[in-house]
Image 1: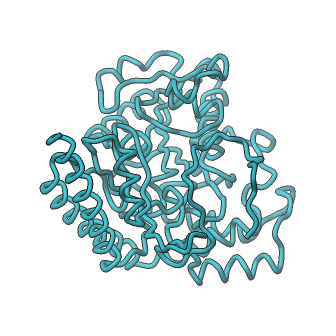
Image 2 (image 1 turned 180 degrees about the vertical axis):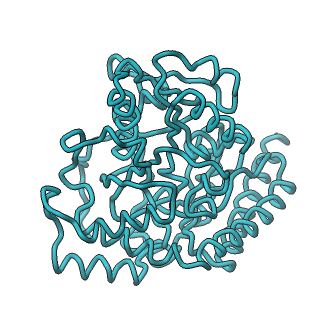
Length: 402
């Protein structure tokens, strides 16, 4: 195999020295000849695992027919996928995009346009929450408000007011004559697998109703089964007006979607938004295949069962290694391990055991296995976590003894 001496990729990723050539189910096979248990899922993307036959077949069949066409023409398959998403949710209408950030951009535009179309263009500000991550575009970075991502890109996009997560009084105080909506993740992934109480979400819904604001949920990471329901807000029992989806929607093929009620989106008329590639036939075929499986009654039941098993076993590991771990967080198969040691050290130790995980805020390690993970594979994953913890604990003990 020839080696590339110099990378021509923009060096914006701190890439691990590891590359893969194929995947099957929850396993990835490296070019180093090793097999890795994938509890990253492309950061919550590969919900059906790798090379799922139904998804592969759907993409192959569509690629042989029609890969792309312009949104200047009708899309019968797109209409069908949109209808399925609406039937399974609160929404009446769907806009298809290519990514989570694009889906969020659409959600922001819908929220602002809602008021402008009612003759209130001065109402454009959106309340967001500390620790949020909404994407990498200039507007979604401003919505997230994290300085480490905003630094060096000039003045931030105006119109976002950030308050502490779960602080209802601060949220109330932030509402002013220019407020258009409230934007929140049902469960923060990048922010450290953090979730406010269900009562907080109910209070947000009431605030929006009382003040004619739109409640916007960013379900880019939590949507499509990750928390044990098709959408995380269904577990909470609160319906948003607008919702962004992506990641698992295409099972690995890039597609995003912004869902909204007809009332929320009534200002979005012809020409107010668009996308060259959004909802093209290949992306729609992938999303349709994912929905085929996720809408089966037993699919979410399996996710909830797998989640319970994983959390129970991880709680036991936390109890045995208090020098390394303090807490198990999360819902469904979006699980966080709060670490005592620097989380990159734990991630590296897990990688040495051929288990792939991903970091998050607040020194948390995220476990995001494919939603089709079996009980045996969960047992194997936890076994590798235990091995890594045993080695790290012994290493720390030796350092203390010196």
